[in-house]
Length: 285
Ligand code: R5P
Image (cartoon, rainbow, N blue to C red; front, side):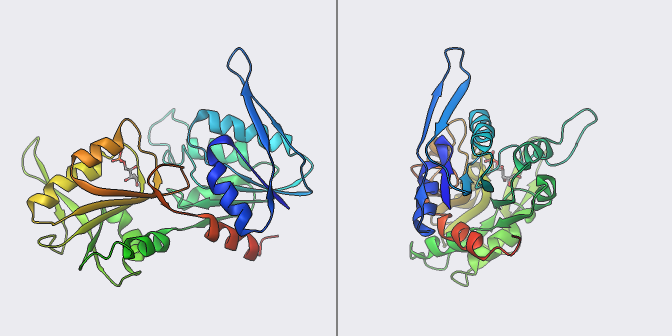
């Protein structure tokens, strides 16, 4: 068994290969003069684990090319971050169900798919292969524990992320809650924890994805106004689009923590061990 990966998942794939005590296949990536992507893989094995976060359109095309290059090998697919997964419903007539389109394209011909904190687990059924989703909530909780915060409040940005916040909080048996928006006027909205107080304590806002950072940046200002001593932001997938990291720091976020499902300077939590464990214990095969 060997591990192989697309260009932007090299660090996690290398960690995974180490955790599985196996080797990683060397892949050379380039472009044709017209911009089309090209790759060539080194020596393959009968069993191959492809690791590829779909973080942009190039990563998606590289993944499709890699699946094809590995044809003939028994393929297991690890998609640490699945882009397009947030369009998981047809909200308006004429829209694609983008999560389905991507899952169908990459899941064909593989024997198993593993995702990490996919935005909507229901999307797994579109892969057309046995699929499992793992959660890094407890790993993020373990990292938060190393910060030695006194009586932190773990806060989800909305009630949909409350269960995730609860799993993070279980690492230290901390209190957790979710933010609730109250409309003060046509343009003015305030946000505060629904049931608990943020006063005189550190707050860690946790979510599956930080994209523009808009939600957390807005919440941080309000939490400081409510007396929070420090506000941290932690997520699984640090998409961090359009200057999000700077926006968060400017809003007073003391530290931004994410995992290596998307490889960033602030990737402090690795998904490698959990993915390795899942691959080793999978009963689907
Ligand atoms: C949305 O449903 C996700 O769980 C995140 O809350 C969202 O992607 C965060 O977006 P942003 O960082 O742009 O506020």
